[in-house]
Length: 142
Image (cartoon, rainbow, N blue to C red; front, side):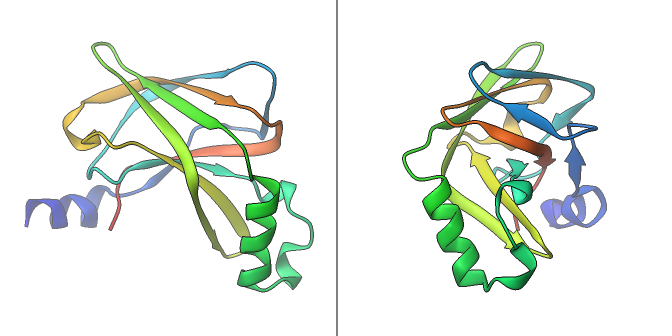
């Protein structure tokens, strides 16, 4: 019951980048002004890659899924959440979310994120250049 009320009142997606960024060759370090945390263990880092897919509005969901699969095949994308007393790794394992004209790659962890505290820094690394993307923190999973 407690989790339900936390989700009801505190669940949100937090934009971590004020402007679109490019991730290539080196890691992207993002210092977060207000630390992030997880309400549920299914919290995740979302990378909006909509700008990298052509003609989103005129394609079916099946075609968009195929585009994502083709564009991000054999691709390594990782992130570290860093707090004062903890660090946790996240990775992309093919999970994407598509809807409302946006496409997100989801990075998640096999750790119990809701038990690990807060993080004030995110470091993202990619084996493929990601251009004009935005990063979001989703602090829950339904």
